[in-house]
Image (cartoon, rainbow, N blue to C red):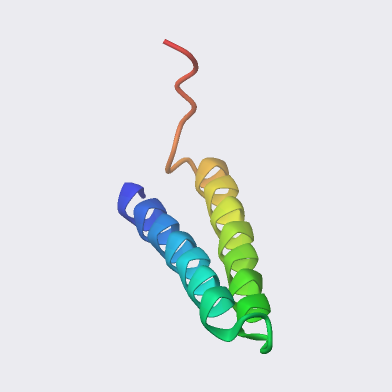
Amino acid sequence: MKIIVAIAFILILGSLGSALFFLMKDKGKSDRTVKALAMRVGFSITLFLLVLLAYRLGYIQPTGIR
Protein backbone atom coordinates (compact mmCIF):
# COMPACT_ATOMS: atom_id res chain seq x y z
CA MET A 1 0.00 0.00 0.00
CA LYS A 2 2.88 2.36 0.77
CA ILE A 3 4.30 1.86 -2.70
CA ILE A 4 0.96 2.62 -4.36
CA VAL A 5 0.57 5.84 -2.35
CA ALA A 6 4.15 6.87 -3.15
CA ILE A 7 3.57 6.29 -6.87
CA ALA A 8 0.36 8.32 -6.70
CA PHE A 9 2.21 11.21 -5.03
CA ILE A 10 4.88 11.08 -7.73
CA LEU A 11 2.17 11.22 -10.42
CA ILE A 12 0.52 14.19 -8.69
CA LEU A 13 3.82 16.07 -8.40
CA GLY A 14 4.73 15.21 -12.00
CA SER A 15 1.44 16.55 -13.24
CA LEU A 16 1.90 19.71 -11.21
CA GLY A 17 5.42 20.14 -12.61
CA SER A 18 4.24 19.65 -16.17
CA ALA A 19 1.52 22.26 -15.61
CA LEU A 20 4.19 24.72 -14.46
CA PHE A 21 6.33 23.89 -17.49
CA PHE A 22 3.42 24.39 -19.89
CA LEU A 23 2.46 27.63 -18.17
CA MET A 24 5.98 29.02 -18.58
CA LYS A 25 6.49 27.73 -22.12
CA ASP A 26 3.10 28.53 -23.67
CA LYS A 27 2.53 31.84 -21.82
CA GLY A 28 -1.14 30.91 -21.34
CA LYS A 29 -1.90 30.55 -25.06
CA SER A 30 -2.81 26.86 -24.98
CA ASP A 31 -4.96 24.67 -22.77
CA ARG A 32 -2.20 22.20 -21.86
CA THR A 33 -1.81 23.80 -18.41
CA VAL A 34 -5.50 23.33 -17.68
CA LYS A 35 -5.37 19.71 -18.81
CA ALA A 36 -2.32 19.01 -16.62
CA LEU A 37 -4.01 20.58 -13.60
CA ALA A 38 -7.20 18.62 -14.31
CA MET A 39 -5.13 15.43 -14.35
CA ARG A 40 -3.62 16.43 -10.99
CA VAL A 41 -7.09 16.86 -9.52
CA GLY A 42 -8.10 13.48 -10.95
CA PHE A 43 -5.02 11.80 -9.45
CA SER A 44 -5.70 13.43 -6.08
CA ILE A 45 -9.33 12.31 -6.00
CA THR A 46 -8.30 8.80 -7.06
CA LEU A 47 -5.69 8.66 -4.30
CA PHE A 48 -8.23 9.82 -1.72
CA LEU A 49 -10.76 7.19 -2.82
CA LEU A 50 -8.03 4.53 -2.83
CA VAL A 51 -7.08 5.37 0.76
CA LEU A 52 -10.73 5.23 1.83
CA LEU A 53 -11.17 1.87 0.10
CA ALA A 54 -7.97 0.48 1.63
CA TYR A 55 -9.15 1.53 5.08
CA ARG A 56 -12.57 -0.02 4.49
CA LEU A 57 -11.04 -3.30 3.32
CA GLY A 58 -8.61 -3.38 6.25
CA TYR A 59 -5.37 -2.90 4.32
CA ILE A 60 -4.48 0.16 6.42
CA GLN A 61 -5.23 0.98 10.04
CA PRO A 62 -5.30 4.36 11.81
CA THR A 63 -2.43 4.79 14.25
CA GLY A 64 -3.40 8.05 15.93
CA ILE A 65 -1.00 10.62 17.33
CA ARG A 66 1.95 9.17 19.18
